[in-house]
Each structure stands twice: as C-alpha cells, then as structure tokens.
Length: 102
Image 1 (cartoon, rainbow, N blue to C red):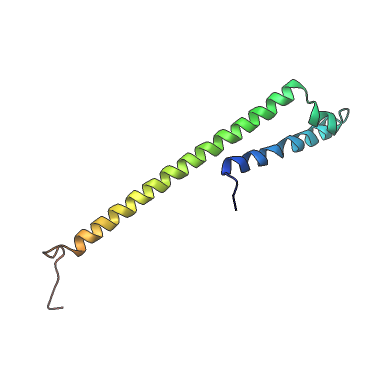
Image 2: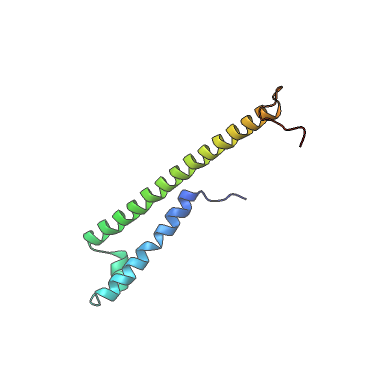
C-alpha cells in the first residue's frame, strides 16, 4: 500500500484553509455570499490566501529541516557514546582505579 508523502498531506490540509477563510469572510462581510468568496475572491483575498499558505509551507519546511538535523546529531552522539563505551570495555589497562580490598 502506497502512502502519501508529508508534502502532499500538507497541501491537502492547506486546501481546507480556502473554504474556512471564505466562510469567515462571509460572516464578516454579510453582503457577499460564501460561494462567491470561495470561487471568485477579490485579488487581495487571493493574495492573502497564497501568502498564508506560503508562510505555513515555509514553516513546515524549516521544522522538517531542523528535525532532520536534530536526528542526525542524536545519531552522531549515540555513535560516539558507543565508541567510547567500547574503548573503555576493551582497554588492556584499567582506566578507572579499582579497589580490590573492597
């Protein structure tokens, strides 16, 4: 079964913004119908919708980029910790002083 990519899911979510924005505008401006505001919005309304979508898209991409870099950093830290643990475990001479008398 093929799953949708996160970018496609994001665009589907943004498609729901247009009807919501048109509905809110129809409540704020009762002289305009919901259908007209949805299908034929004024140019400034179109620009606003596109600008909001662009802002959300850029935030989404920044968060994804930061998550990838954080995951990579965590992986590097785990590798370093494993290497140091292996070094300590396989050292010929004891690294830490051990009191044999107890």
